[in-house]
Image (cartoon, rainbow, N blue to C red):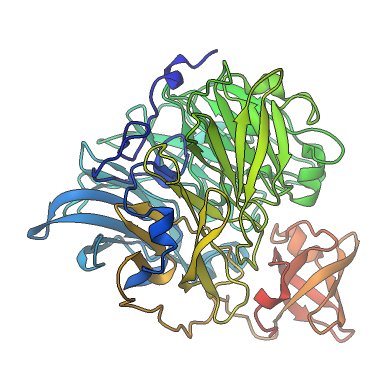
Length: 631
């Protein structure tokens, strides 16, 4: 169906201004990437022009110490009466299950509240290394400004068991407005059995979505471990009461699997579920069984962009890349998740009679899709997407803005560069490359998140912001970048640290009202214009989160050289070869499917013949500079 509602106005979580108009209005940022389309565009920025940002006075102004790593994007609500005064308030959620309400200008703590002990690394499947030492609030919360309510999902450790709760929190006091609800769900499988939500095998990483009078959340896995019990979910609750929706969406409903392997996670590197103004929900799924044969458009929607009805009852469209090079068999076999990137819906475009969506994943192709009818695009990768371009591996999400000529622009950020594309029509829609930024420092998985700020569509007002990823494990700095619309670098500076270098940082720079906010490891940096820097990023001597090793066990890193069944040969950083027997880890679903040329982290005991018998085998960053010392 044609989503006529989407052809009206954007359903945004950020205050907007008329195209081309100047405004001094305050901008709120109440959801991931600014709006429910996930455009990442602040079009009300009148202070941080390219000239101002590149003029030498844009500086790091304030630092705020936090109690844990921040994986969630900060949110902002202006002109609030809180703690005895009127403030623009920045909300920052940490993996310690803490939420801070900060003065957005100075970083002063106005209110802080903790919502329970987080789940420790030791309690995660296989000691999953893709996180900090604790997992608490990982998915970006969402704010309903009219109801003055922030919705967040916490992950707490209670009686030696992990528990998820959804909270409806007063944005002034940070107190729960109603009793937090323990998250549970069930769904019927194809064999007639009932599958229940398993909090110990499910990671809530994708940003929350507020739409249709509901709050929605998606779930993934921890390091693809416990693949026998972990499956992707979309769940929803009524705003205010937190009453669960009558239906939910389980992405993999197979009763059995040849390898006992399910997954089909929804994680999108932390990007949010998207929603059209008609209320349909959009997301992208990741890998399932590495045999590459378990995809099914009805029972296992792996490696797919999905359009779901607002009540979660009906899959209305699916786009699944197919083909021998970039199709779902290869994506599953190589763990090249389509769902490593988020999906973005475009506002109405004059060059298209349909609504449009964009998605890219690990394989580096960005697809322009018919958002009104994804299914018609699903026959083959070479001719069914409206168009496709190569952008580099994407642990990331796209951003959007409208150029001063009235035509849409897309900013991709796969690989190591931001690229500006113009959407053009004609016999076939095209994405035409206009500019490429300089290199963004990134030693982790390719890609990064961007934000675009502008003064409406005024000529010369666009700034593209990006946060790189660490290139080493110490000092593990992350940098803030600013680029012009033409790709020239306006600014680059250290914005924080990320010592957990095995866990990919998915930092979204938040730009609003003349300031830029970057949240990282136990730290928030506030940038703005000034005559001199008044703060510096503190040196960190933090060590990466690492699971404790039982007596007699070791941990090694290496690149897979050869695979023979469950026997793996890896090349260590020293150049030495190590033989790994992963049979026990596979049997316990504590091993990822290895790929030649990809790095792994292996824990286990070494026998007299020098063979390591793996207890767990996980993905590692392919860059040895990010590996922790073997032990």
